[in-house]
Length: 82
Ligand SMILES: [Zn+2]
Image (tube, rainbow, N blue to C red; front, top):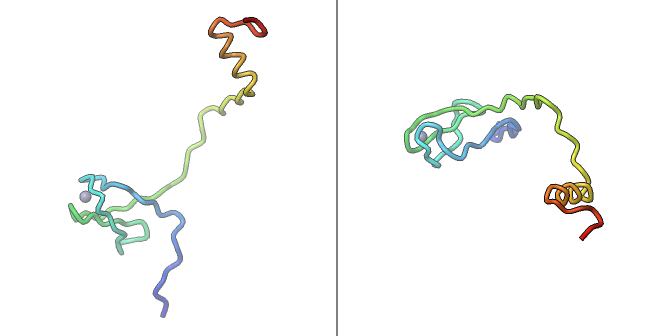
């Protein structure tokens, strides 16, 4: 007889009940993703389905020297000037 289950890597941990905002949440035996709110007595599930791809890839970040030069230029300073 085995008492301990394998950990569920897809289980998420809500910080507040979505119905009453209570923080008195405990895992429930209803399912692998179920939580029990001890204040409003609701049992609900939180399941992570994945993450959508970004609509456009992020622009490459400039180097620190380039970012400094761009910042100075935006403020009216000339490179190598005063
Ligand atoms: Zn609740």
